[in-house]
Image (cartoon, rainbow, N blue to C red; front, top):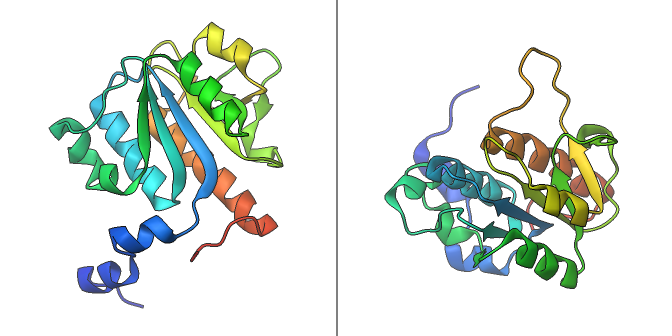
Length: 184
């Protein structure tokens, strides 16, 4: 075993034009009032890793181009389709019109463990503010509330880390069901 070189890694990845033609994970991530540009950049980078369909940046979530976003996105702002919405409500409405089921990643009464769910439809996953989470208004608009198990003392993960765990869990299900190909 040996570590791959940068040349080998880059040779395996599609260029931006090829990437535009490849199928995308049937998922939208809606970022509601995320305040940290570094979290936004990290979410872009993770969204690129599994070819998420789109990112919806809502409310005061910062939008590219910003050097703070680019620092953690490492170019993913160019490879992940994204839109800005004045409000999370309008982002949710747009996702619903496109046929996506709205899931909030939030701790709620009656919330479901995301890691044990079966995905049956395209999902728009709403991520909330680092301190306050997903707003009550958006929780009420959701089809499902999902959460990640928290077994230690802390009650939550960093929003970009939570997105990474959630997106790979969903990705794994789509691939296992044959609804999405790793290579396109």
